[in-house]
Length: 279
View 1 (cartoon, helix red, strand yellow):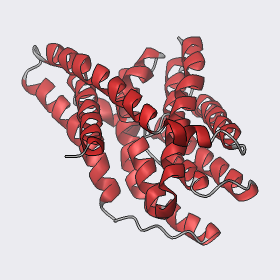
View 2 (cartoon, one colour):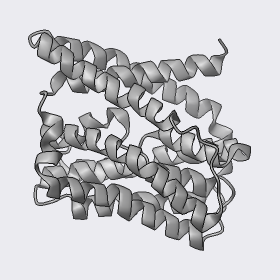
View 3 (tube, one colour):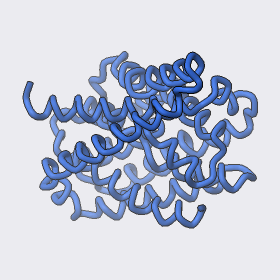
View 4 (tube, one colour):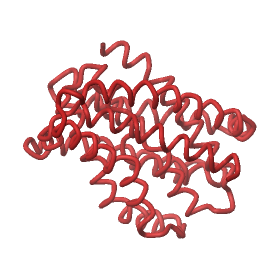
């Protein structure tokens, strides 16, 4: 295997472990909260899959962005929550039921809405994607659905061992993910630096700030859940974004990868002070 394949497998393993740790700490009924309380679910999905995509579409329509950048931002805007995000969601005060429900619901809604939003982009901009129909479902299954279900199932079978297993998964997955991200940033550093000019950074900052405001405004009456939704609205699944944008712009891979990584850096950096304020 080449180094790039090894790095992808390491990142995948770390994400699977962190999501499984979330499931080990969850109860079986928690993912159903936003189904039992549809108003909360509708507000959350409006922030993630209506407000942010509409804002990004407006920016792509109005601004002369370089090739691949707009596609990457649109891919981010319609991707579900970052897989290991749940720990951040509870850290800002979100109820565990709400956080787990948001993780599951956003993945399910993404599966339904991504084909529709791809068709809208094709109609507005004439951009056809060469994405394999089952590719998005496969990534979500491997990185979110399967490890979360496995963790919840293990917690039901061995409730006493679940906290210890979750701790082991966190201690292994967290450092491995951090190391993999650092290596990826070093490898793609030149591509990220190349995107800093031409207004790309300002556009990314605008998208992140708008996402935080939309999530905060639509998060409902509970302050903790409001903070969790704002965080989830800007911290999206990078693998899904890369998959979508790469399928639409296969000839601009460097710009797509650089934009997604730069967005993650900006999102984590701008979300941090907001999250400290919500705590």
